[in-house]
Picture 1 (cartoon, helix red, strand yellow):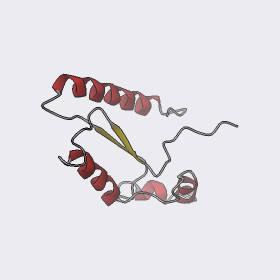
Picture 2: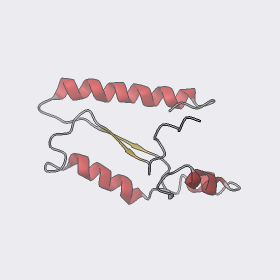
Picture 3: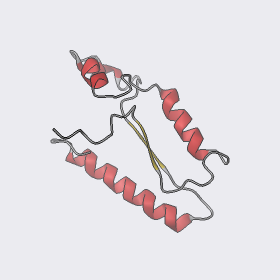
Picture 4: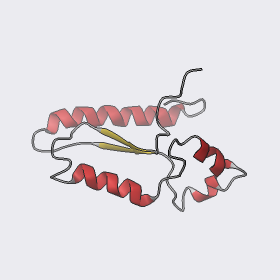
Length: 108
């Protein structure tokens, strides 16, 4: 979802999603094309941002599963999509690995 001050990021994500949808149709049935959309992932790159005063707690409070993903969570999602058994009938899919953080915001 878009956020103020992040139009460049939201625009690039939307462009990537459009590319995946087009390639999934163009390359089928020979290839499957899918997208993995991670939320916050505990990596060395994320740690400085998460260590800013209270940010990790704020991030976690916005994740319905109440934790930040580990790299293994993303790797397992990729393996699921790539596997010829579990992912054999999946193409043009955007799989969020966000603990629910990418769900639409509740109205209210």
